[in-house]
Image (cartoon, rainbow, N blue to C red; front, side, top):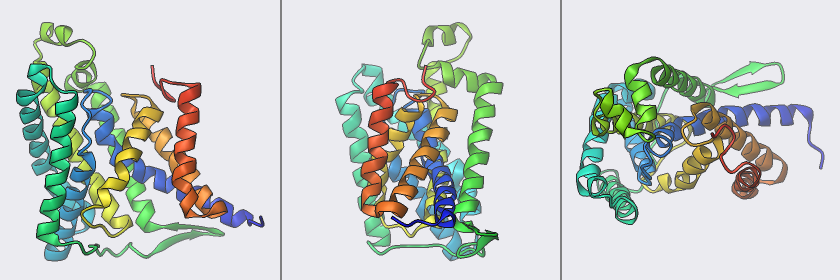
Amino acid sequence: MDVSYDLLLNAILSGLLLGGFYAAVSIGVAISFGMLDIVNIAHPAFILLGSYAAFIGNSYFGLDPILAAVIALPFFYLLGMAVYQVYYVAFERRDDQSLRGLSFFFGLMFITEVGLVLIFGVDYRLVQARYIGESLRLGPIELPFRLLVPFIVSMVTVVGLQLFLAKTFLGRAIQAVAQDQLALRLMAANPVRIKRIAFGLSIATAALGGAILIIIQPVEPSIGREYIGRVFAICVLGGLGSFSGMVIAAVTLGIVETLTSTLFGPSWAPAVSFGVLLITLAVRPSGILGR
């Protein structure tokens, strides 16, 4: 197989940028699943809600998709808090969050998808921005802005959340809530309130990931199903509760997929990337940076 060095280099860099997108859509799962032990399989539905919020802001008000999502973040934060409160009252408080809790999130995903179909139809929707379609050229390297801008936004979000979790009392409480709730109560912190705030953050970051998604590609209501396996795989591969591990796993998956697509064709990419996941977990069951 004759593959030029320039083509290989561009594939690796494209994979790096794609990994930034994967990190953006996985942050919320790293919080809800990795830190709160809540298996929110409806996470891709909230990503799509963020995509359509960006679409509305862009199409009807002329806002940049990222700016539209940032403006909508308080709404998604409150939505996440409300969803967790329902989940807590109906399932977690009764210690019945396993199968029935999964059914709750599955139903939420289905209702969201049907609602989006009724409102927007099944046609693909896209957004407009000056940087979409443009590229940054550095010699043989070509970096499309539709991937570069989301990568930068994703990394800023990850670093910001990491600093928040590490440097603030609330952030440390979120990290501790799944480990020792009694210790939190002794520190005058309400575990349910902490989880509610954390779940709100996870949904808000999902909405931001949705804005990034619609910049990269057009969306339709059922496209979120493609990311259910990926986001959970990335969090498990990186190590539950580890943001740094999640980013490494996302970038690894992105590079593996683009290299596979370049060398063997796009149809092989999902199989090879999940093969890497299985091999890594066989060697290190706790994930890349798992404890």
